[in-house]
Length: 488
Image 1 (cartoon, helix red, strand yellow):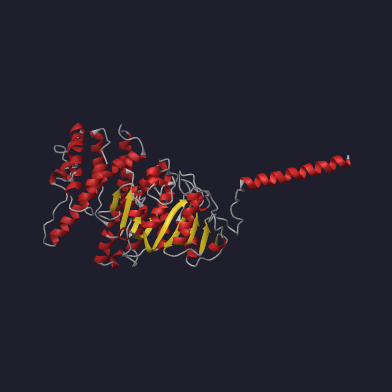
Image 2: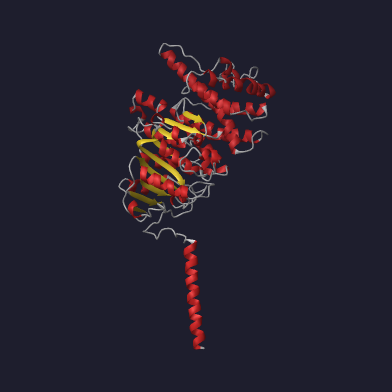
């Protein structure tokens, strides 16, 4: 039911002059979907309060509730066309009344961890791009038929929303910017193994895939969600998941994704993580788990680099410094990064590898095949480490598949099953091996992925070595020619 509804919404938005891409479709669908979801949530809470003999205090004023402005009903429960606004009247209400009023919620909210505050943030960051009031009416009518009251309905909605995020990621220049493959995220969460009571952080939160999967993992940590106590559920709701995101659209989608998965007031802040000076991070600011896929290929300005002891323009390298610093002692991390980080010879990369190996136990490196991130033509690895222990030995696993990955043939959970099994014991196999840190070059700390069981990757020779060999070959040639001449 929901799948066809999403298709119909996209068809309507595609015809509107204000929406031109998957990015626009999900952005505009999100704010309307959120208000319908909030309406269903308020109805459920009102019923619960009534059963408990209490009066429910609505979050939204009556004039902004779904059945007042979006889809007012007649006595038969059908759309009341005499009350339902349309065309320019509806567009004016959305632009001049709905958005400005909801935007003020952020200022009026008592705390940042309330749903009122998140409503204010969402409508401060978004704007209505739908140019036709008739298109708005059509989308409202479609979403009005969608209900999110049961667990099954909420699960289906969150699943389809993930699908839209995936499509948006595929449509962008960088697939990894909005969408990290869910089988990979599930695997990372499973290997890191967070527990209820941990504080879990993603400083490049994007669509909040890591936080959502960690929430799903912890909900089932006792076999079923029903076995969790009220205190444990409250801990998961308010004191477990934290994130930061720089880009407005990704920030909104991250909040929406978490809300649709059942976290009412996500602790996600709209800020540039790298704008924070590492020296300002104190113990109270630290987290026990970091799960992240920071942007690859980005370049940061000099003023941002001043916030870090290891100066580099490479965004991912700055994020890695941030993650190491913000982890508590004994904290665990799973971080996706370009595989070139393991072997780059520039001073910053060498210094960062040294920092990682000396301040953390880098116990596992998962080497991923090209095509893992659709639309992002880079090879990546996942670094698994614990803070506070020096690395003695690194276990490598090279994911070798019998097919090429791509949009029509993405990474799946079965692909990663062998890695999960072997990682528990760090066993050697055709695709896995261990490297003693004492045996690597202590000047470069090169951690290149070289599978000894498959011949590894071909390492490019240094230019000076090539020139030296050419010089030696030239000498040999001169000597041979000299001998030939003497014979002749």
